Length: 217
Image 1 (tube, helix red, strand yellow):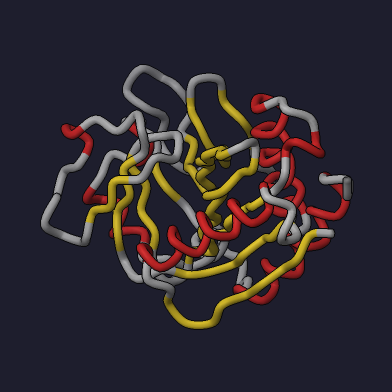
Image 2 (cartoon, helix red, strand yellow):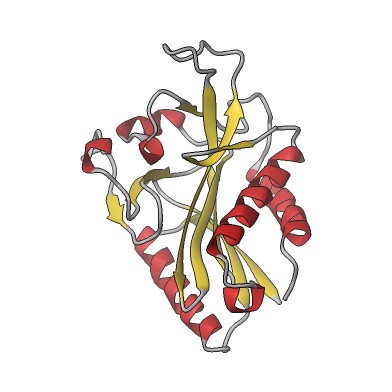
């Protein structure tokens, strides 16, 4: 069984990490069910295990948290849905690559419910939206904007951290970092793409897509 929990308001990042770690340990011990936890954070930057300090352009802008999830620098803030994913891969097959692909599929299926075509790019983590309405990069590469980030960690084959999807965050706040170390391309959100989607709308879509993508073990 996978529990779902939505926390209203803004959740402190250190509190979120402590809660995830405790729940992951309990799941690994067989003392708790799996959990999808939906939160929003106050404005902050997180540094994954592959973060390069040169990609932190404005270190004094918001609090910066070093985290042991995979990936590079990411922004979290109001208007962005963060879905923390605590799933037991001991029961779901110990295949990290397949699990990340499931997370990507989950995000893409969720966006599809709003007629947004998200895509995966080799060498660029996250989910991307083609932007033919914007100028191409100087080398002629078509412009694409990132709408969702993915970064996980495993402990005893139980996952935590997870995904984030931009509903209506302040996109200018991404300017303090090079998001995921990727230059040139931009960042977008559901509202930026012209969709009047609420956080509640996204939560419903996330749940519906999860039940299709992830089988209950």
